[in-house]
Length: 397
Ligand SMILES: *[C@@H]1O[C@H](CO)[C@@H](O)[C@H](O)[C@H]1NC(C)=O
Ligand SMILES: *[C@@H]1O[C@H](CO)[C@@H](O)[C@H](O)[C@H]1NC(C)=O
Ligand SMILES: *[C@@H]1O[C@H](CO)[C@@H](O)[C@H](O)[C@H]1NC(C)=O
Image (cartoon, helix red, strand yellow):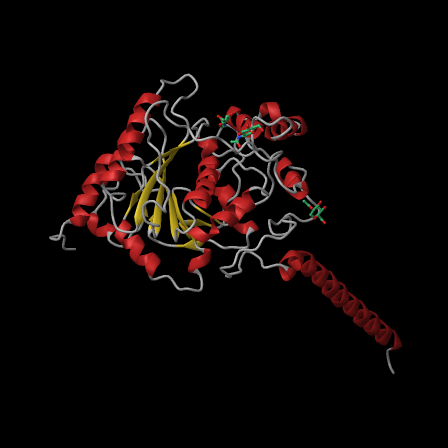
């Protein structure tokens, strides 16, 4: 051998190279393991099974794995077995949950006022129905009428009489196998006019208002889902599908019915359908819309369906209620419903016909509308006109 030193060098180099490959291989496989951990044992968010399940510990389902961020929601979800019963008149119950949150969040006093108010009462979820002092206005249960195939549950606010009337005169009007209900909070707000007598009249006239005695503000939206689901359990357990929409939505009801009836059997029972957001993250600009402080929530949002309008399978109602009792409160209604569906192991289904941010200046062209299912926001006037055009047998596109 002419160069023993060269041989030594070469073997040293080869050893180093081997070592490098080995280190990279082991660290990569460790990384992969840490990353895949929660998904390899549990049905992750890509599961397409229509059967809901609710594990005893929701942490892994909701992406809460160690090391856990110190944000309040994440910590709370990790520890949470179940929320308190929700009755605000019971001592040591839901109000205590809010007080504890306020005490545990270091910068709670710097939170926006509506978020502070939300957290203080977020676990209070059991409210009595608001009933007019005189007269009936009772909402019939489904057995007394006919069990609807599709329940149109429209979130409104007491003062929005015109919006409700437009829905009754258009897409929510009487039709076979369809039932229309409006979901509202109390018509007696804080420092606002008493709409009680007007709403009471409307309730007697149409018998389609479900009212509960809580303050009707955006951060109380989730109470409408929750109290509707609980109402369904008692008064309408057999409904096939429920559309939850806002009162400024326009729904092409015949097209939606047609779509639902044609759904494959394999996924209709787990339906959570609408305009899906998959990459949403919390917004961190204080004072901006949808601001979420870092001390409250860390992480990405789950895939969720826009709260402007979505459809769920009726048989999921009791499941969703159970999930809501065990998912820590979150201020934005649609994100919260997304978290609850994730807790159940169900994935949202996207449909291109749901457009929940329709540009205000865009005219509602009936021809463009033929393939759409739900659009918002539309004024009561635009809704009426569009409905008329869609009914027109002369409409040629
Ligand atoms: C869920 O599991 C984690 C990790 O084992 C545990 O620390 C946490 O307390 C559990 N949460 C509940 C509500 O049991
Ligand atoms: C809340 O609890 C009180 C006292 O236990 C009870 O009288 C009331 O009916 C409950 N309210 C609801 C809405 O469950
Ligand atoms: C929601 O309604 C309850 C009951 O009226 C009220 O105590 C709470 O402050 C309301 N939430 C917000 C964010 O205003």
